[in-house]
Length: 113
Length: 114
Image (tube, rainbow over all chains, first blue to last red; front, side, top):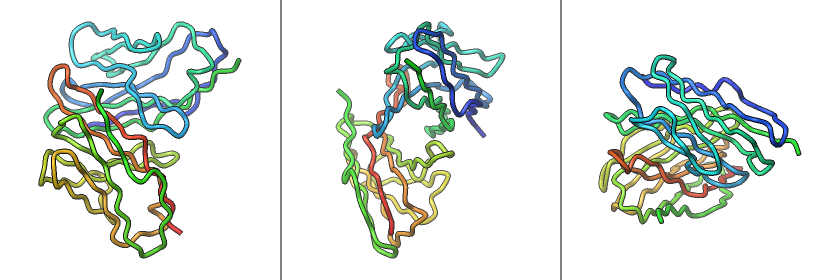
């Protein structure tokens, strides 16, 4: 069965600092992997996605993520965070043969001004 | 632009009452999903559908029914609402394969069962 683990429930960084949000997955094949962001009282918005090709994928607002099959990871990064990046970030996996989607529990990011 | 619309946005229900949450998508996606979001649990899958007329149980289907009468519409039904079903519910649509690998979410429905 597939699963997604986001080991950090909360991350706090200062504005302008670099960021890494961790995501580990469990799946025997090659999954679709996504990062979504949820701002307060809003739905989830797609940041970026990966299925094949270059393991480093670029997303919106300067975010990128790197897929590692050997480490079963899909960590999200940003070189310099802004206070408006404060939100909850979800790592998401989809197993292509089932069409089911599995969410991590989310990481709440707080950016201090 | 892909769009998923949920209604109502907020709902207060009484214990034992019937609640219907509606979802409409204009993306022409085959797959639609209902999730609930609770603190400490992230999003959990309740029901999903592969297309009109189909519904499948997700990870936490107990106490919920689903209906997919058309490609565009997917409803979540609580026949006998309980306080434990107080939550925020999200609908999503998506298709898989190549550039279509994306889930689109509605803005959510905040349900309180008193």
